[in-house]
Length: 526
Image: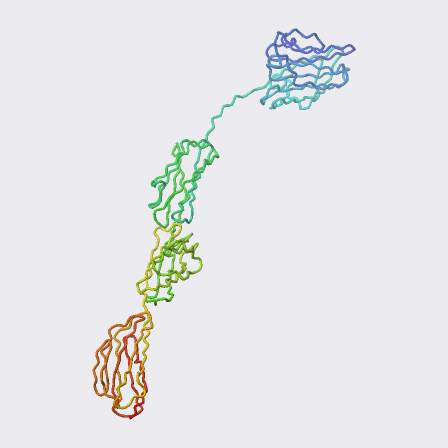
């Protein structure tokens, strides 16, 4: 055993017939640790004391020695080796001792081995783990392999001493550490998902969402989303969408939303693209959005003619001919000046000179009718106008209803005689009175009288002239007889014979489809 190894050996001296010694060494000279108690050396001021990370448990008279490798100081060493020896042993009798190998670091040590550098009056019979012999010099060693951070491995040895005196051995510890450097090889990868409102009303806008993700293993630099919207779809007047995303870490996703406005109805389809440094590129699936819009039509219906002082109705039918529902649909009917509003259909509300109908939601293809009933006292033409509008309706619908207000002629004919009975030679006067009891004038009113042969015509009076032919007295037609007007004709005749006679009158006019007849009985005597 050379001098440096002897300096590293821990010598165990015991009183009795046998002494055993254990020594620990390293390949470079280091301090010797004695198992006997010794006074602590004064430490420099502020120096951190050595930290014992491990202490073997002992029983009976066992003696412990330790040494830190490779510097001898636990604070700067990697491995702490303890030997646990019995206090004494008998020649030729087996005894046990142990090596405790502790990793002082926070790293794994590779190829850890305990080498028996020398042995004096001691032979190893068996151990756990089993000892191996080095090729060439037959040196014993225990290969422990990897020793984890702060891990302790125990080697248990059975040995014999050959003679009395002392027995001992010297051991050292070796290990390897690898410095490994790695370069991360990463590959960022982009995915892009685009979603859009599948169906939208034109004035509501189209919600578009872009979700870009880095599904790779590195940072995707300078990510950008681009989309060219179809013709008729834009954001603030622009069809080109350019969204700077920035850098995306591995596994990171970002979402962006825009609201596009449609200038027309129909289908809109487009796909978006995401790009990044390193020629990274991802394309989304194309999205399809159907943009719809309500369109209103308004149709009016009314009687062409309506009678004075009688109620008549103007009707308006609002119809949604578009492909989207019309919400908050309102039909406003402007009332004409003059007629009196008699009533309106359900849901109407009078607002000044108009009636408002809240139709509500009108689905595509649905229609609704509203109406107002009026009455007029003048024979004029009456017009009402209506407007229909609703949410998202581009152009309001308009319609007009009109009715010509007319009266009803009602002609009453009365026939009386003044002098009844009449003596032959005397005169009689027949009075024919025509009254228009209706609300409209009648025209071309013609009177024809049948004079009995017992009379002879004396004279006529009235608004029109008369002619007599074969006993028939015909008056020229009266051109017009206004409502509530009266026309009167008188026929004066002389009795020339006795008898019970009948004076007959017949009237016809443009409004009458058949003549009106009247007779008056008169008694003639001598």
